[in-house]
Image (cartoon, rainbow, N blue to C red; front, side, top):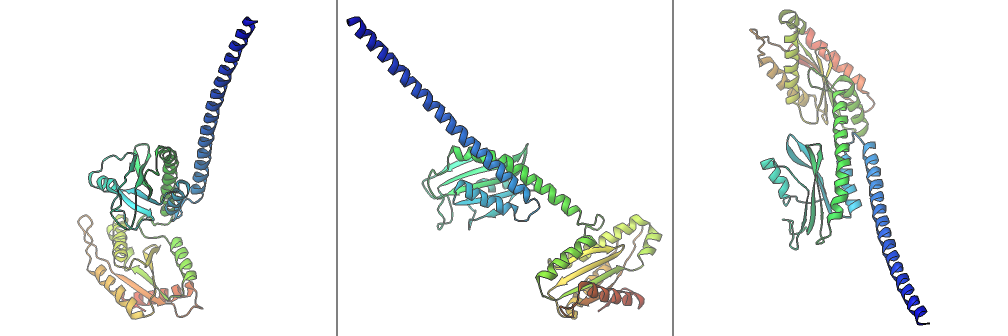
Length: 352
């Protein structure tokens, strides 16, 4: 009988031991399942974000969208995005009033040193702005291969809010964001090349019309159209060659572009003709004096080509929108008529 009791106690102990071991294994498996679920959720989130951003390629708001996504998925108080331009990190989006405390950005711009991911938790306020409380932050560089594309900085007002798990998520996100940012850059580069005249660097005719038509729909402000034509350009080509003609046309285009307002639109209309649209103008005298200033600069400009110094002048025709019932074609037609009046009455002058 004693032998049976001892055997029973041993079996009971073995069962309890196996039960405990099984429970530990189940707990470990459950923990692994939870971790795998988290990774799966993270991957699904990354894929969704990547798809969403790629749908918006070419949008001017794509960086602001990425910044909002960072705030949303991480639950941070602040997010800032810097993009690299000519080896300088420039702030593109933030919801901070001041970014003076982004010392690593300032150091990079001063010393051009390699940036690495860093987690900062501080019981004292990191921000230099007393009205802004920041006690936790992550600097996450965005690299594509070895090329720095930008930096994401996420920050929170709670101490130790951000941790290694946030770094893991941001690291995975940054790889996708690098591809998205680069795709957006390439998209905009291709888009821009389709809008720019190769020789002059001005907008091409089609893009000019698309901008003016869009702006006309969105504003009722009056605008002026100026048609500009290089005088005796054919003679310049015949005398000095087409390479010289190209240099002349580019130089004149640069002069016109540099002496207009930022909001003015200038394009190569065709051949040696250039078209300008000036918004928010209702007095012909204002447009005239602006263009007269440009005409005089061109008249005094000496262009050097090999052993020659070809001089060039321009004629201009100005037309201002009379009323909202007029369309752009009518305004351009009047400017064109005034241009031919200028050319037929001696050239190197402006008619409006």
